Image 1 (tube, helix red, strand yellow):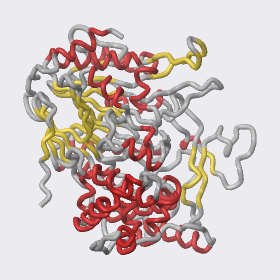
Image 2 (cartoon, helix red, strand yellow; image 1 turned 90 degrees about the vertical axis):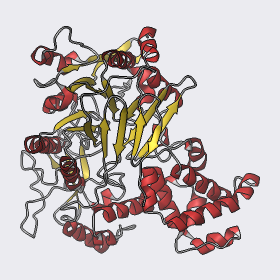
Image 3 (tube, rainbow, N blue to C red; image 1 turned 120 degrees about the vertical axis):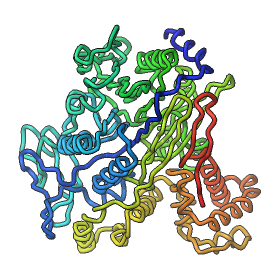
Image 4 (cartoon, rainbow, N blue to C red; image 1 turned 45 degrees about the vertical axis):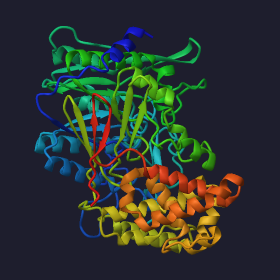
Length: 596
């Protein structure tokens, strides 16, 4: 590693950058997981489900699949459009979609997404800047794929797969009931970079500057001269399954662009594809920044060089990737691991302190992540004044539905979190879900989802129901310790208070405790709008009362409950994640939230 590249940004850390000519607004929308509910397969393999109200046919996933996933598949179509409409009303022209803009890179949905981006650019003058997440190119190249849980015409799941899968073999008839179409395959880097070339992955004529880790223009920037260097073949690095043997070329889609004078957008492709000895690659979802130094050392060196040049040239540098760069759990990750286990709740995806230090050493002062579907602000600070602030925008396709609105200049970054509670059309698919629910009931299916979700008055309530059902149907049975789960599901406030020997205000259940834990884990201080203050006071009293026994007998279930409640308090007390300002000179974070 060239140590000069790391020392330059450290020396420049305390220099004040030149201010931009004006303030610029950027919207950050990671984890859209766009699913085109009106998408049509090119070969008409599946025409969709007819809408009895006369609307266009729909191609959607089952509600059962949505309520055991951390993202909504279908309603995100409407929520994404609502987010863009909200950003347009606020005068936003620059929109960043930092990863998982698709759900496994399926052509039928990627082409639908591209049509929407073109629509909003034409109507509102928006420009989009994409970077890849683990659900975009799930593998570096095109891969046979599909889903087993599209909704069929009779309310049953309808499997749809691409040729080359086990369900649609190339040398035999498809499995019974399976629909085969190439439009549901997983697109790799080449196709994605081509389709979205005008959305950051290649220079445009109106860009003031553009480069990659493999090519930096010299002299006066000329987009026409630079375009060939945006091709996948010009953006390759090498990975080896064994030391210096079985080596393969992989695309790195990172880029730096200056869309307006003085503003540099640094898009980091932190997808890590670790080769398997038997062929293919491990998925990138569990690696992220933690594996960057091992598998993409060229990227760390380039990031440091960009940060140094931004300082020297007085550019305001806005860095984004699909992955978080700082642990988002407010220092509670070791406690959560001790309570739930190391492989639960995606804890293995958290960046380590060493990872945060490496990125701070490279001169990055703040970055915007995604991947976890969390709303959060996290900070890493070194003893010599170095700092790194990680901003996590919540996705439009989960609780709490929102995006991040960032106003930047050379001195300050202000971040707001516009909520998406009123989403036109969010309930337009409810009739199809009622058919599905009735089919499940008639078939005697176990653990049927609660159809009360279909009484939701608005999108806020709908996503709240989504979280509650996700906790009930997935997290509690799969991630929670058995004794703690059974304690909560068999007690309400009165019962837990009696267990601890205190009188609580009441009006809540043990299931509410579990849901509130996930509220705070997922959205930080945004969740405080949905957890009554008196219930929080009950939690604090219960934790305080149980803590002495927890210290004496840490393995008792009451002790585990005390630790859970203590974790919840610390999650609620983290850095502001709703409306705040970052001083780029000192890294100080000022809370600007008005909770009146």
